[in-house]
Image 1 (cartoon, helix red, strand yellow):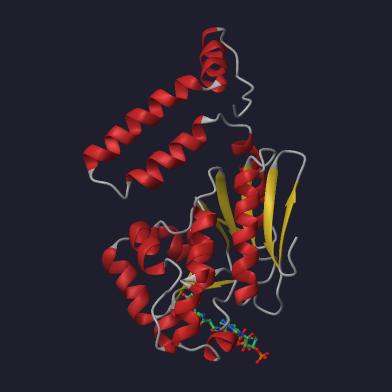
Image 2: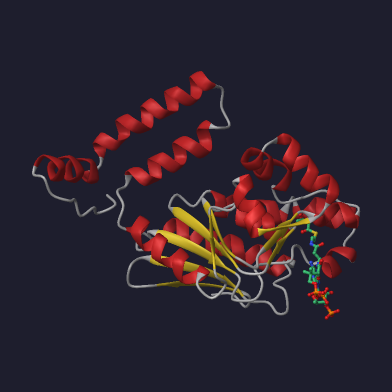
Length: 257
Ligand code: CAA
């Protein structure tokens, strides 16, 4: 697809969004655009049923490209309209299950990229952090918001104010990382889990929407959203397959329709 970001889909409907910009997958404006395109492809292509985001075996992403940013002024950033954040919104809104498989550093925009996924599977050598403060910045691609929702206000402040790095085990205790695996296994484990989700019912999309959109609402509105989406499940083929299979004491083969 792009020069630095590719999307490949396996026979099980699992797409891998792969970043490849040596040496550290620094996120320059071209990658912002390519990630947005990749997110759109994963959203639109019905043959894609689950997604893994991977930066390769050495590093997930060391953040926005500091050298490119140093050359940009206020007007250029203003005109870019939060370009990286917009790309990450496209990724976060992929209506299918997404897993970030993290080897090595996930810093700044790299950590924020992992936060767009439903789950983070980390290598035991992975390191996460929001070091922007050391550059005189704050996180600019969702870090102050998605991180806070995941690990809580005071922990997020500690991360953003301090700019330190945290290892995979610490991140697992905080609830930021969902699984820790040996470095050479993490991608395969993420694909394996994504394949299991790819066999799941259309209701997975409803569940993602209910949780991701509901958390932004007051509780009454969120519960109304849940009722709407719960009811909408009855319009799917998979709800009938799932219930018929239960009654027949078998297992459903879902169609994601
Ligand atoms: N942007 C541009 N280049 C980067 C980079 C980045 N984010 N991170 C590393 N590089 C470059 C280095 O400059 C170096 O290039 P040269 O070989 O040309 O000197 C090369 O990648 C390798 O880096 P190091 O020599 O530093 O390698 P290391 O193994 O000692 O350290 C690292 C690796 C811990 C990732 C370290 O490079 C580092 O701390 N990088 C910066 C991380 C950071 O601050 N990220 C936040 C960026 S701001 C942001 O992301 C804003 C936002 O929210 C959108």
